Image (cartoon, rainbow, N blue to C red; front, side, top):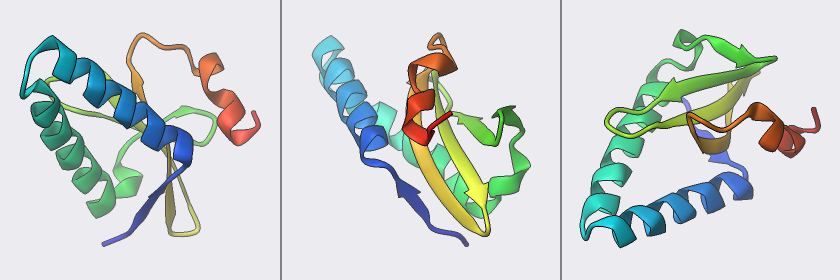
Length: 99
């Protein structure tokens, strides 16, 4: 199995999402985290199985929540660049990788 490294902005994404869901309903953030972990596990097991969405960025959409794990897979390295709501434009985050 591979390892994944998230850029710091991606970790901030997750923190913001978790805080928002917990404000909506106590315990909902935990549900989100479980779904996120399941999505990450799927990426780790087979990072090549998801299609490229933007240039060399792949996306694994998580279940139950409208978010995708956006990552690069090059040279057997997985770099998580963000966890984004499905309504967000890639223009909002492309500066993370210098596009």
